[in-house]
Length: 155
Image 1: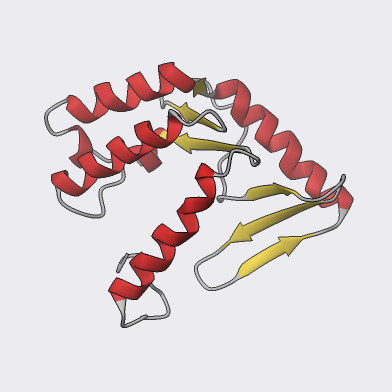
Image 2: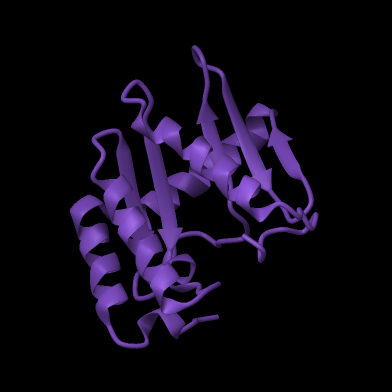
């Protein structure tokens, strides 16, 4: 948490508790979630190996939920689009949509249909590059079980 704390929040326990509380929505079977991670994100090591094993276990656990789809884009797969920054596409009530882009210091909300369409096209390309579900979980578990794998970073 301290790595992703540009505002220097002092109460780390409170920040962790809030983040864990936000994750409870994943258990709401009335909502669906799709996550696509790059291999670099899975391998990023902001802490000791024990922390990373717990993170990988958490990913596998969440991927087992019926309303969660997990995809990983391994480095050995062709990248069909550039990865410039993370984003979230929210499907809201009715046909309303929203795209959010989180930067280091601000959350940008994209409302314009032409701009949202760019993110939708990019997401579709990411989907095509990804491995999914059980294959993604096996990939994470295999990668996590390799000695030194969580300390290897690719740039």
